Length: 313
Image (cartoon, one colour):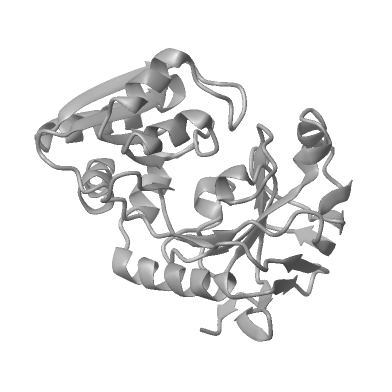
């Protein structure tokens, strides 16, 4: 599958781009090849296409300049391949509030585009909605692994979100590649131990496990990853908030160290720390880092959803 074909799938199957619509690509210099490819495909599909290339922002969640925000608010459809994520920014939320359909592709690569974009979106949708339905109705989730993860997360009253890569209606949002269902656990309630053995956002694929002791909904202790500790401590105490429980539903995705793809891998679970305001929570900090767990067992209330990385539903 070529980059050109993957770009076409994004505009047609994922975004539902129509002729004459204002299509905006926001990219930064490291991802300009992907940005230009998306722009050229949008032109070929008959849209009124625009390309905005910017210098890279420092960290995921950093707000772009007003010029970018205003351009986004004026577009019908926006695709954002950038080095740092727009997912949890006010800029993205404002564009959605104006009716734009938005997809973010933070730190995407050509390999990821070619491998994990061409999927059966109806099947990904069915899986994602099924998991979201189970999370929606649950009081709690229990996550554990043979490597030592044993974590309980309270979910009662929180709304789960299925992200399946089809954004055809006004205000729709998700990131690409797609394929997950996620929820913000109740703040202050998660307890236990998280042994991360896949990858961590902004750090990459792990050679050794990272152990996080969770108390009262916070990452109280982090072992074997001073880089993660430093990133969180730069943003204050609430950056250690247990922000998300997510389940991957994309059967073409692989764990490579790029969390954009890693968190979508079917058979994995991810737990994030930091911002959960855009997921239905109340913690608004400028950082959100996903931790990928391999071969997990996940129970939602009394129902086993995944056992040792194998789906049970």
